[in-house]
Image (cartoon, rainbow, N blue to C red):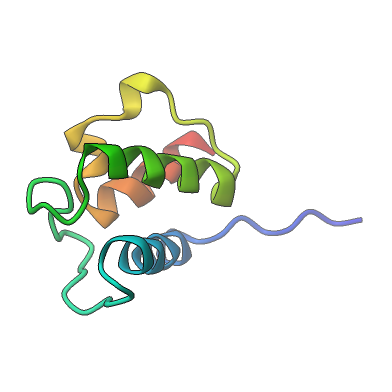
Amino acid sequence: MTAEPLPTHQTILDQIRVFIAKWFRDGREDGLMPDTPLVTSGIVDSAGVLEVVEFLERQFGVQVADQDVSLRNCNTLQALADLVVARR
């Protein structure tokens, strides 16, 4: 039995983009670039950040600590993907 390979940073980024588009933008991925502000632009509100964190934990098998839930880690797709990679 072989372990599944870990997803690449780009794969993680793409999966987060699809999730954000589906849950917060009626499926629209247009304009969701790696550095698009999510929280400060109003795409994702504070309750939505918790939904995103739950998705990251479930999808990627990582544990996100309370202190990780910050604007620095949760405001862009890039920061969220970096957080997943750091927590694996």
